[in-house]
Length: 326
Image 1 (cartoon, one colour):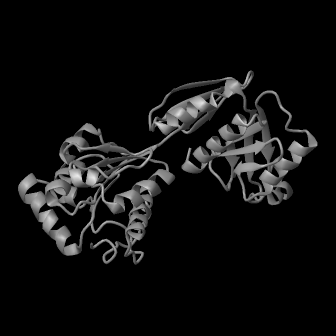
Image 2 (tube, helix red, strand yellow):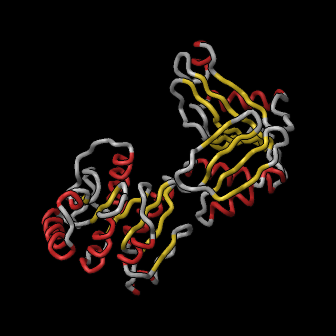
């Protein structure tokens, strides 16, 4: 589930708190291309208001039309399929022959929506099991590597919460932007800064702050293939401690801010003092970020997340030099 869908759940919970009727739709299957991935959510209020998206708008319009016609007055989970034929596919914004299937569920006390949101707010990853016969929901802890969604004849299992993790070394101004943007992309964010003058002023809802030394934090973090580590302090005594551990780990992305000259000096230090190999040093993204002409802290944060996204999807991209050479 991405952060857009977390917003849908929050809006749906707000509607429920107002005693409004709400139907939640989850994409359970797609054939061919589809505007949104499996697991994406849309919520429809009893007056036709929509939160979220599962298409370019045509399917949402149809849901509103069905609601007003009384077709969405359901009492238990119900599957709905769009785009079986070419004409219908075009009507609903799907490619010719594409198909999208939604599981619609009326929300109520049995949906455990408030409990789910409380767990997600704590940064937990949750497995949600929907009983298709009764509409009741069970919540359990889930691993980051768990499958996004499973549908059987009796249940729908979906996974919610951060699938990816970001560990940032340094709690400066740029970290505020990087952490907020990363959360919007579905990352669980942890910030490490033992410096009192920086850590005391850092407060971002949903992000974890630790004052421990960076090398200890990286080790305790149990870095895996779903983890990115970004060093932003400009202080070799802190950045290098994190990098010497992160570059030996399975992290899918390791980056450090600084000019090309400083990156060359950093590579030499890491090799000489910490024994990192050439292959390990080649994993370092530095200067960090893609070349988008970034100058300001939010622009540089954007360039870093752009490169992280490119690496996640195995895409290419030119390195940034001027923008991250602060």
